[in-house]
Length: 335
Image (cartoon, rainbow, N blue to C red):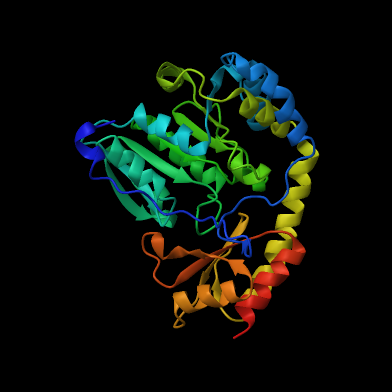
């Protein structure tokens, strides 16, 4: 981290509402948790009187989840911690790093904290750029907040370009498990960042991991903080990553509800296609503040997407359970 840049880097706004009277559609976390999480957490507390081990069981479960070798898994306290680690071993002061826009604001922030310069390009054009001009390239798939999945074949072709240029590719797969697309985990030249927050509905647990091989993997393992997960987080993470039927049921529900919501909302807004558990809405000439206020009057919190680069008339809406989704549809379509 570059001490000269830290004081100049602002915090990034995120979704999430703690208002007890509102159903939270501003954050994209699963409203349902896998069965048994509380029991696993409680059982792990007895082991929390000792320093955490090398997370062997967690790494094995993560490796099975993304189809890589357990030795390639680097545990982290959430996807954001995995991203910080990835930028920490690839970005030096003055480096230019290519980032998609609009996309997750933490990319630019973390690059700046390392002293680097984030260079934004439209997310749909990113794979057409020359990676040789950059110290690293970031891809988010599905992209947040637009929801579109990067074509896996095109991404692999771009990875070949990155390898030829010896430019590390950092791929944020925080929402990839809501799709059937394969992970790039274990591919040379790539750092994959994964989060357990979104699929398993546990943002406060802070469990995630990075995956890399070769020199990138060695650097990640050398730079990783010791005890980078709490013992309960590792135990809950291992449990969740083994819940295949839960993941499949969640995908089916999100696919079905997202299509239903998009059909309904498209009667009033320009709704972007999505492969993620959220929808991006362009409210057009209507005031974003007015839409957000109307949603709150209807008992729901939605995300003001104007905080994303290049979006000035947009909101983002999570996909939750059917009865909850009915609430946000009623609120947004009551004009």
